[in-house]
Image 1 (tube, chains in turn orange, yellow):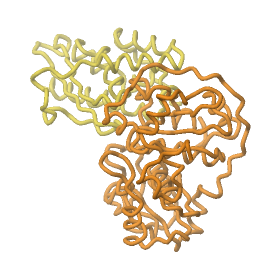
Image 2 (image 1 turned 135 degrees about the horizontal axis):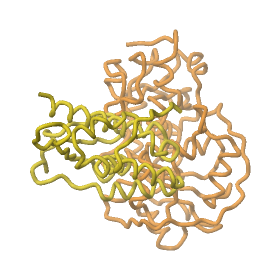
Image 3 (image 1 turned 90 degrees about the vertical axis):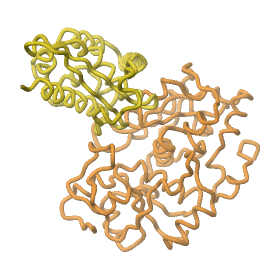
Image 4 (image 1 turned 180 degrees about the vertical axis):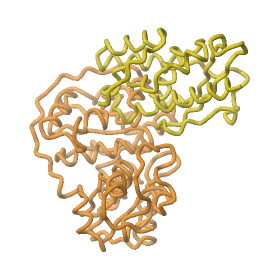
Length: 294
Length: 154
């Protein structure tokens, strides 16, 4: 337990080892525990491809959701060889503790964490509150870019089935719990794209039949950190009527905001069977002859 | 990738495009960050008055811009000035704005209107930042030209 956060809020969660506090991270940095063969790997994953370069947490290495984790041609993630390269060149071994953080309430950090989980990287955590909380607390940023010594990361087969849903999986899932984490306007079909993101538009508006509307941000506090377990249970269990034994599929537009909710349900509330539908509305709302509810 | 037109860029923008195209992906990001850092702040008359600027929704983070066109007898003689506002947390958007500012500010209205709409595709940036993100710069250029057109219409 020495390498976990001893924080009362975090210890309440189903899998407290998945979340670290800014205080804990600052201590690890202070103690020189970042980087090197046995150290913690700290990765920043942002929506904005340049944000890391403007200043980042000392010792953090950049990972870009689009350039590093997506296949350059097909709409899919990198394969085992590609993932091994991404990890190896950042000096990450199969047993390295990885801490991810980023902008926009950790959307892209949660997304990267979910992709890491597809490849079975065991010890991967989020920094609670992400980049914004670190900065709000007046903690140090630097423009110094670390140069990790590359290592060999094993080629791991990507295992999509347990935590990733494809369109056909969702069609087969209809009637079971679905969580739509988009804004209310997107859910109702009034908006064909998220405010500010018209490039992620769709031909049709609405939601997948039977989906519950729980915008992702309801799980976050003002400062970007996660709400407490009791507050999360009040939303997802009491109000929405989900049970931890449910088989749940979460979706948004391209799968990043739903990675945030996937993290909440899987790691904070301990649901064992949650899948993220990364095709999300940019696939469903453009697909021919799939059912839509308005 | 869609083919780019062969309409020439104005010299100032062509020079920036050449710098980007000849750079490695890492260096492209470095250059873009320099443009972000150097994007001029809004002058006094616009500070805190974003309602006077046009919001560009196609950028992933909010960007506001406006155009001023100096007086003159013809579009060839009327100089264009560009003003942008984007938060520090959106350096990519600021970088795109910085390129357009450096490349277009001070040109004549006629020269700005002659800039091809696909100019943002000529910087070799798609691979470095992803084509999705580049759409923001296309949208900015479109708004700039539309404002110049409106302000020079008689």
